[in-house]
Length: 308
Image (tube, rainbow, N blue to C red; front, side):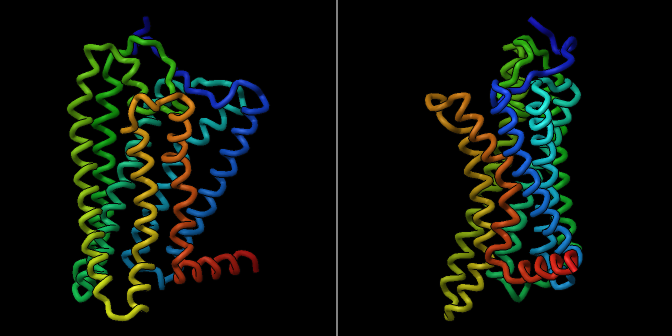
């Protein structure tokens, strides 16, 4: 029986035991990581450099790309390094930092997606008031609120989790440090200390989810009342990328944490964790650029500028 005061490291779940599969995992994660760096880096640079994209929608998209870069950089490089060097270890402080950063960045991303839903609602349902309600000061305040709420959420849960005594060893059933896996190592009498924080987090997440759903119900009702087909197409083009990103993020996270125990298995848990923590940061830039002519044009200009 080990105690958290004597723990110096945790053991993460390895993707494979054979050297060939470890190198395959390293190569796949390296490809995904580089794609995420390239896609989000290009998006950030294009939005920052093109004055045509200095609007609320693209300001929030820039923040989303920053959060995606941070979240994938928190978990993937360590997993790649472990596979490359054939180890599973992560230090106690490294695990705490990973938990804090992932909670901070993923929570901030979810709150930012909620803000982006409000932005789309104002743009389509109250277009005459858009300039007043979504001025630069309001946008900065909403983005800061998303980042700040994510930070406070991370501080609360990380401090609560790592103040509990751990009595069940140090092996985690995940390729990165996350609270549910650490709670499995806690002493039974200390487990309930985290329940209050979890209930608060669930209420906050559920409230944001309801807000997003209600916003999109009103958005689609307003779009269907637009008389011209061209107008409806333009409105849908503004909303569908954000809706796709929200759906991907929420569905994978909900399946990861709400799936029935009867269908749970280490292999399935591993695949689902990759889907919600690794795939979205890599594909979000692609989703936003596919149907966005302004962003695609800005990216073409940026690429031409770099290549010339």
